[in-house]
Length: 110
Image 1 (cartoon, rainbow, N blue to C red):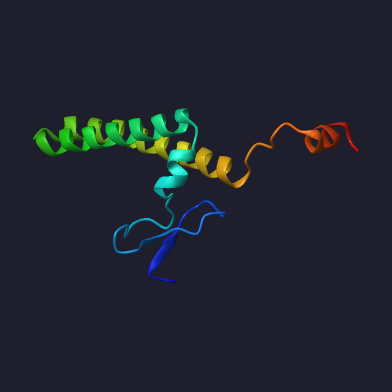
Image 2 (tube, rainbow, N blue to C red; image 1 turned 90 degrees about the vertical axis):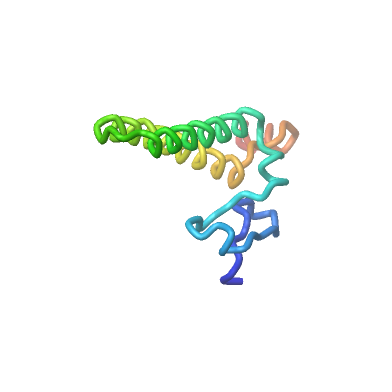
């Protein structure tokens, strides 16, 4: 199993090839990603869009000062992506309990 990376969802058994994602130590499979709330998915995609946009701009510029400012902006998007990833992991590991009798009894202490 060392040549595979498993999905971050503990209830999911899907894996991906490690050589396809050499820098990653965790992934989320497509099915679990599509099951996330729309806000999580939209923010994750927006961050990747912005990171890729700034990467392209950094490659095109010849001015080192401008390139450094662009790297700083890109790094802010990377930080935002990592924060979102942590929120995704938390929502998958500890999902909200559905409203029901057991949840109600637990809230009132029985």
